[in-house]
Length: 158
Image (cartoon, rainbow, N blue to C red; front, side, top):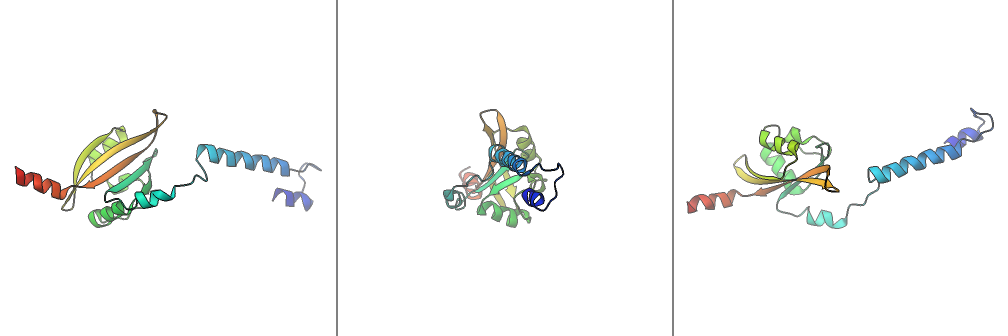
């Protein structure tokens, strides 16, 4: 685009061609995107097969606590149990605003297992913060394991 402006006679600095500067700026922006934001990073093909077919709901949040990934089982839990829609990019607090303990665990970035009731089903939530280089917080994984039948069996044993 800059080169077209030069060719059609628009030259803000007389006969200086700004095309090389445009290439330099574009290269720097792409390089920054590649390194900082992992632009064009390839998600492995196996991810869809492995995570997508799990019998447990998986929810992945980024460092700003926004939803970056979830599997089909979690979508089913949210749609049927919470009567809400889940989308990439939404704040997890919009889904779990009723569950103060979960909100506090995610905010405090601790690893913990908790049990919760969603409608008539019991789930064990395994909250695991993710860290890059052991210290830089990069998000959290929340695993939703269905344990209603297990809890019923425990009650029968008692």
